[in-house]
Image (cartoon, rainbow, N blue to C red; front, side):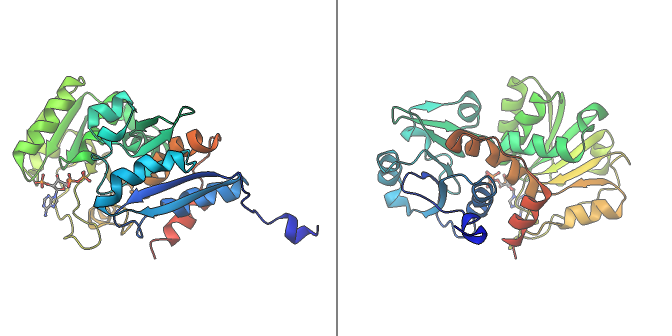
Length: 292
Ligand code: ATR
């Protein structure tokens, strides 16, 4: 076999199978992301986009273990709907009532995990290693599933004071209940928050849809934030949101949203394909090309 041929990475008949279920799924960057790791590490596996209409969701999920899948990711709109189909749910996913990663165990049973919060915190620690040591409060904008995952992950890493600002105050109060139970002091604020509410904030996180392609930008004054504050957005399309641009203009440290996506994928990959994988600059570059 010549050099070119031996460097081809081919899939065999015993390839391990995984994928992402969503509706639609064509926008998902996960096939590109997992496909990169499979190629880089020359793993005999496939990761497929599975666009499944709501009527077909339950039967397809039930059939995947029978078709030899070792697991799959779950994306919009199915992260909650998957729960009754699972045999085991890890404590974090149960607490969040949402699953993004499913592992098919040896006996064919389905185990659900939620790695979104882990992805958020790992990325933040990679980008700003001393973030947790800065003290102060964290402010979360939004009160959906992402706000819950981010809030619990922050508490795991030692954050004790969390402010939640949301357009619908009742939803913010629900999230506040969850985070208080997990051990944080939580304050609910109007959205957008007033300047004075930002004065003790060391970390500002946008978990709302504002700023995402197709949604209005998140336009809020940042002048109340201390100079040492970190501003992060979980929106990654576009990568530089209005919020991040405004924060950079004010001289604040910013963390964009793509790293959360990359890090949340690590846990599933390791369970399905048996290999721990790193998040590298090259991976980031290649995944970002998928946004173009
Ligand atoms: P996810 O599960 O991804 O977090 P979600 O549950 O739909 O998504 O939550 C979206 C968040 O974006 C919510 O906090 C929502 O505010 P409401 O709770 O008031 O609906 C917020 N959001 C969406 N559009 C918004 C807008 N135009 N202005 C302010 N907040 C908005």
